[in-house]
Image (tube, rainbow, N blue to C red; front, top):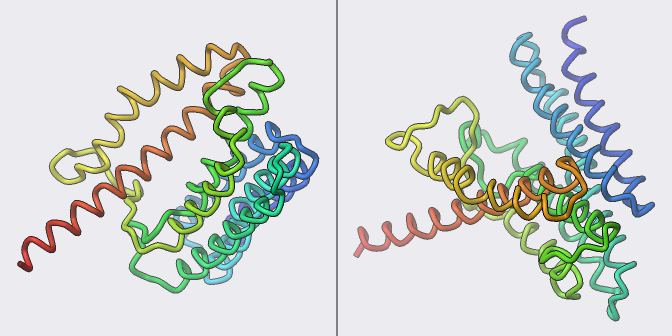
Length: 258
């Protein structure tokens, strides 16, 4: 019986993802984001219980990726697609850039399943991380619009190029070979894990205070403003730190070869 527990949790991830897809097409971005947070929780718990109960199976691995494709590959794309279509943009064809993101997510998940070298760190941006930029961003923007409160987020989303470009950039990062750190089984240590430590320090000292200050200025509550903004800032910081580290590492390799 215990072998079915992780798969059942994975299916809850899928259910949350399907609900998020439906809500995205209805233009309900805040509840869609909250359902995706549920998907994140279930995505963590299925692996946790699979290891705890020692019931890791090939079926579970495939089911997990299929669920992630719906929750983190399709739902955020539908949110971006629907937002752009109803934004008053003059060139609605660019809304379909959102599905480039979905295709890249599918490729990323398929590659992850056959690449056994991603047990400690990732190659390319993880699909849930990409989703946690698009979904909370649109959720926060909808709250700002309902509160009739200006924000730099809504100003960015009002620009026709921003959302399609974001979808393309995140898609490219997912299928890239850039090394992205994972926090699985790691304890903070400046000597052993300097990049991870810098990320946490920068988040606590810079990113979190900015998210709290700006989110509180909207006046719509923690779960509607501070939480989504903190998540977006955290994953943008995560990407920037990893990209800078990859460029620096590449530069060091060239110097050694010369």
